[in-house]
Amino acid sequence: MFMIQALGLLLVSYLIGSMPTGLLVVRLLSGKDIRTIESGRTGGTNAMRAAGFSAGLITAVIDILKATLTVWLVRWFLPPVPAGAWQGWYNLVEVVAPLLAILGHNYSIFLIERSDAGRLRLRGGAGGAPSVGGAMGLWAPSILIILPIGLIFLYFVGYASLATISVSVASTLLFAYLAIIGKFSWVYILYGVGATALVAWSLRPNIKRLLAGTERLVGYRARKLKQQAKKEE
Image 1 (cartoon, rainbow, N blue to C red):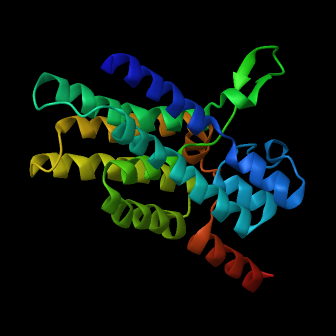
Image 2 (image 1 turned 30 degrees about the vertical axis):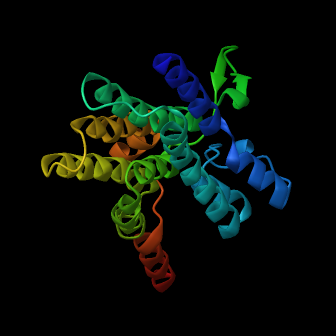
């Protein structure tokens, strides 16, 4: 019975993650199709490009809560298990649920389409916001650590892709520390590792541009470059 309920919750977690928040928010606020704008991703960053700051913020908040909700659903509906062998499985389900929400966010079953090459593909975001949400669901105070790290990277380092990756790497280090001090099971570290892998995979084009030096700058460094360009005119 435990395994059947767990599998059902994991399927629901993927479907929750698959909800294309950015597509819906941008369509509602501006009438545009976010998939035709800039990167074509449905996350908060591209929603902001498509329909302004409010659209980006609303999208990001909802995407965070999507992954958080999946952890809550596991804890609400999966029957508690006694300490022992089953406890590890319970913790694993807690971890896999938000990872599936990230997977759904990045590869949404609701955004299936045929590519120019004629192959079916699933579209979505990059996974930054739901990776924050999954960590928050596992341990609520984590957002006070992980989110500021992501925002600092975004503003001062200036690359949205690195900021997105920094969030999942920070969650790995945070849960490793919490495991060392005995607050959580070592299984929780798998969340950070899995989230980092999913985010990095979805950001492969951005990583290639970073290595080539062509990735778009944002934040403080982008503003300084604009100011410098104006002075040189």
